[in-house]
Amino acid sequence: MYSNESVENISRELVSSMVLARIRTVEDLHEQWLRFTHYHRYIETVLLCPQGPARVLDLGYSEIYSPVLSDLREYTISGIPVMSINFECDRYPFDDESLDGALCCEVIEHYTDDPLFSMIELNRIIRPGGFLVLTTPNVTSWEAIYKALRQDKHPSTFPLYAGGIGAHCIHAREYMVSEVVTLMEAAGFEVEKIYTANYDPQKVYEPIPGFPEENRGETIYCLARKVSKPRKRAVRWIYGNDIPWEG
Image 1 (cartoon, rainbow, N blue to C red):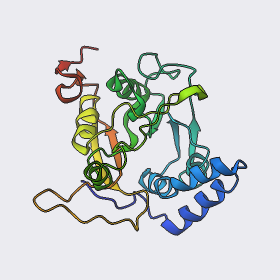
Image 2 (tube, helix red, strand yellow):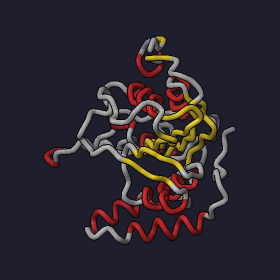
Image 3 (cartoon, rainbow, N blue to C red):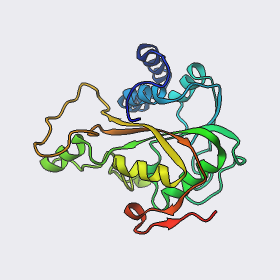
Image 4 (cartoon, one colour):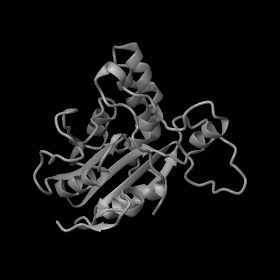
């Protein structure tokens, strides 16, 4: 159930070359460099996604991997313009069970109030058996732990305030693998695959004796399937209480 094998037999080399080509289309050199820092995450996301054809929402629409998914996975991808609605309290502009799947990549760590609302809305618009691909930074990665032990950098992946640039960039909360599973199950999804990986596959940290070694990559990758209506409106380890979903 939990593995990092790709869903379909599309080669990593092909995905890599297509992602690289997309990054090189970014004209602003600083923005292009930022995309390069996520190069391996883009590749892993494409490999995790199920094969289409499929009508899909990309909640944090990416100009890098979304076109690759359209070409390789036969996705018809919709987005929601950034800041056009509040993902944590507004109804998403799609009919019930009108989509085959959704991507929520590097989004939930920015939520400040109600991440389960977003998962429940995705449940509403995804058909039964449809998929949800979610990626988010792993708060228990070796990278985060070693930064905390060294005390040279903040352990959060993105601890910087947006300042005057007019966008919310700081990570409000980062998650453990078990918490992602809890959110998925509460929202009516069943986890099909979940694993972690580093931004740079060559980066290796020495395990700390006496502590588990699994799920220590910097990013959590999750593929889940809609199996039911939402089960809970709140979960204890994230909200403080378990509250059943009453629809």
